[in-house]
Length: 388
Image 1 (tube, rainbow, N blue to C red):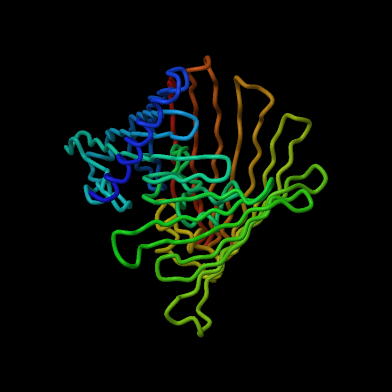
Image 2 (cartoon, helix red, strand yellow):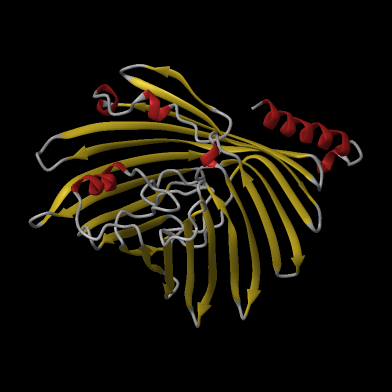
């Protein structure tokens, strides 16, 4: 921990001394963020219900010392309240859980009526020039290209179902980008883990060929050797993206116990008014038949990783979203998990009151087939958000 923080502040001090040579106008400090309140109610098949609430604040700050040095600090604060807290739905061990090398998550208070969680989610220093960019600290390393499933995103895997977490998690890492040409780049990243088997080291090469952005990665993911590739382009007016990653235990590379996650998607805009996205995911370790225990993870939104992006071997996604109005938008998304006969449906409506305030209504509905298709849970949500 001392080592990481020392490196961060060393870079910051060096940047400050170098910035003295620049005019004060080039040194810029930016602060933005939001406050939003999300209220929901879980509705279960046995006619029981449970109310829950989340007051969520985020502060994003960035200091540009000069054209070469930048630092950032972003803090996320959440207060959980309602019947879900009183009923013991949130355990301290799960809330006070920081996946980074340095523990930057705190619980200012933990009571039965409400719990507060504060996390430093970005804390990095960056040097950049025409040919090179180096970033150290807690940062977002986004190697995915698809909307829903990102097998190439081995550093910061996230779940599409966690829709209210737009910024996505970060990693305590060192990253270097080398511009090798006008349309090519080599990126190297290292994420030391708390334990030996948590380390992630990888490199990615990006290029453009025949109008497609291509990327290739290789490295070490926890206990596995990993290789992967991705692309993004269009076929006529239809967007076409995809990515695939192969994981294989490094200690027993001669065996056949590798895991493949592969996905592709098509997207298209109809008359400039409706956005359509269709995606498919293959997970070689997914279920081949229904399993009630694994199926419960759909509702709890748990156990998602780069190696396990879906509990089913085959999954599909469909999204329809109105984009014609900047004030009022509606949409519906759905995921079908083949081997589980499971369905996740997510309709939404958003109204922008002005450039700072908006209000949204969401529904998360989960269905599973046992003897027949049955509704397992509905989650109705109302969100009011103020950005600044």
